[in-house]
Image (cartoon, rainbow, N blue to C red; front, side, top):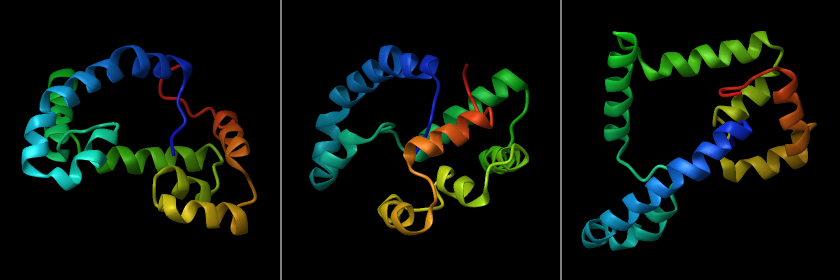
Length: 133
């Protein structure tokens, strides 16, 4: 689950998704030759790239933009701390950071979580947690 700004939504729709569709179309024959059973899942991924390639690209961009690199886990840990300092409950931080598997979310939401998706978004917005504004 992720919440993002209208600006990020527009970027994903107008810039990234057309690029992603071209990528999927151009590499579909190779992926299909290697793992036909994986093809449907691969085509549905938001980021249909190898994790190692994504990490290498991110680390390269870090080096060029910052002149140094840090572990991606450090960014995740920082954001969890930031959410906590903004008053976000620990259970919601775990949910937003993917520590609650999506298949378990419905059970969690029905039985244990005192908020629904709309209220969760309101909590997120009230905390002022935005990536792009």
